[in-house]
Length: 156
Picture 1: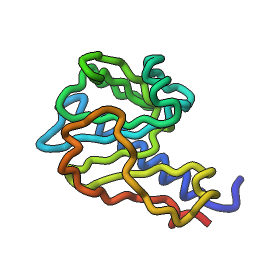
Picture 2: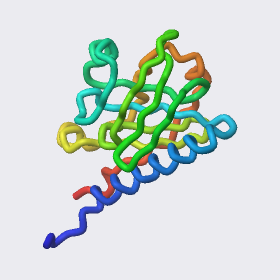
Picture 3: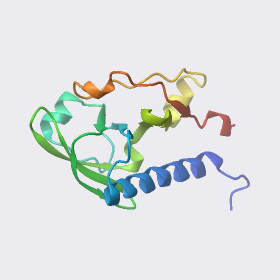
């Protein structure tokens, strides 16, 4: 039995559960109002399944936008899959929650950032900057800065 409560791990689990619940609601009812998501994920993470040409173009990290057009959103306990349009080429993506680095809904200035232990070791006080977009995204114009929740304050 551990002698300490691992708040960081518990927060990560809760935040990923929040993403799952939000995506499940969107899968059932669609995106309400002006809500849309920028989801950045590690393309190298276990369980990520994307087209080879996308992996070649984004060998480490990719940001996708779920807003005007997405199809077949399927949400599970471990991750989600969705078909997105990349320049008139629909592609199916499978993204485990553990692969997600950031989840942002700029319409309400909400964001979550998951930090790996390696990032913590490099710079605990690093400023959070917006992740680059995977495709030319017209809807990114006029985007508001999002408040990002960081787990640094829960770590020793």
